[in-house]
Length: 539
Image (tube, rainbow, N blue to C red):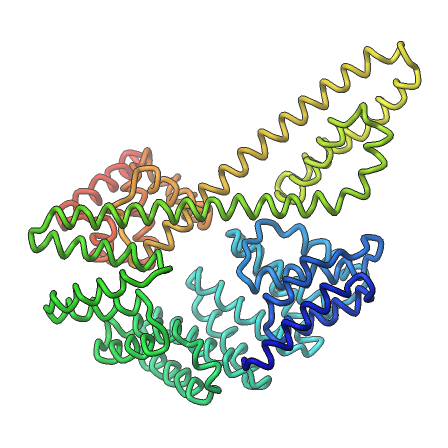
C-alpha cells in the first residue's frame, strides 16, 4: 500500500472518531464494512472500539456485532466466546437477511473451530455454504469451502478435503483473487502429500508458484511464510530445491525457521560447523520465540555431541526459560481476553440494570448473581439448561423479596432466608466458573504442546504434567480414540498413552523415538508394556 493510501485511511479513522456523535450509526457501519472488504481490519477495529450503537436499534446492533467479530478475527484477537456473534445470528435468522446471516455463520464456525469444536463448526459451515450457493456470494463460498476442506484435513478425510479445496480454487479463479488461489493450491499440495501422491503434489506446487509469479510486487512481499512452507515440504524430498526456497524466504525477510532449515541441510551433509553458524544466526533474530526454542535445543544437542556439556546445559536452560516465558504470555493473553470480553458485556448491560439497582439495593447480591448467571450461560452452552433454571429461581426470589419487603416486619425472616439461598447460588456459580477457566487453560496448554509435537518437537524438556495435559487435549479432540483406548486398556502410564496417540496420528517408529527421546530398545520395551495392559483387560 502506497503512502497516499495509508494517509487516506488514517484521515478516515480520525474523521470517524472525531465526528461519530454527529453521524448516522448505520452509515458508519457501512463505511467500516468497506474497510474490512479492503483488508483494513486494524483501521476498522479502531473505529469500532470508539463506536457505541443504540441498543434499541436491533439492526444496527446486529451489524455492529458482525463487524466487530470480523475485525477481531482478522486481527488475530483471541475470541474466547461465540456469544457476540450469536446475537447477530439470532437477528438475521428472524429478519431473513440471508447475506449477512451467511457471514455470521462463517465467523461463528471459525470461532468454535478454534475452540476445538470442529464437528459442530462443520455443520454451521454447511449452512453458510448453502446460503453462498443460493445468493451467488463467491467470496463467502470460497472462504466456506476452504475452511471445510481444512477441517477435513485434520480428520484425514482427504477425498472430502480435495473436493472442497478444488471448489474453493474454482471460485478464486472466478473472482480473480489470485492470493486466495495460491493458498488453495498450496493446501491441495499438502493433502496430496499426506496421501503419498507425489505427482499431484508437484503439480499443485508448480501451479502455486505460477500464481505467485503473476501476483503484483506488493503482494509478493508477503510470501515469506509460503516460501518457508515449501522449504519445509521439500526438506525430506529434494534438499537442493528445499535450500532454494529457504534462501528465497530469507531474501524477503530474515526468519529463524528458514535459518534452521538451512542448518538441517548442512547437518545432513555432515557440515556441523556451517550448521552451527546458521543455527546461531537464526537464534539471533529477535521476536521469534518458538523457532528460537527449537534452534537452542538443536545447538545444545550439537554441543553435547562435541563434548561441550557446560555450553550444552546453558543452551538448554535458555531454551527452557524462553518456553516458560511463552507459556506465561499465552496464559496472560487468555486472561486479558476474558477480562476485556467481560468488561464489554457488562458495559452493554449497564443501561438495563441501572434502574433495578436504584429501586432494589437490598437485592444487589441477587442482581450480581443474575448477571454472572447470564454471562456463564453464554460462555458455556453445555450448562445452558442448568443456568436457565437457576436464573428463573433468582427471578422468583426477587419477586418474593419485593413482596415481603412491603409486609415490613412479617417478611424479614423469609427475606433473610431467600438472600442466603442467593448467596449460595452465587458461590456455586463462581466455583463453576473457576473450574471451567482451569479446564480451558489446561486444554489450551495441551493444544500448544500437541502442535509442538506435530511440528517436529519432542518431550525431552516436558514434565509429567505437560504429557498429561497434551493427552487430555487429544482425548477431547478425538473422543472415538478416547473411548476405544478406555475400553481396550487398563491403567495406562502417561508414556504408554502418549505412544498410542503418536501411533494413532500416523507417526513412524523413527518419529516416535525422536519425539519421546527413546532408543530402539526402550521403544520395544514401552510397546511391550503397553500391550500387556491390553492383554490384562481382555483375559
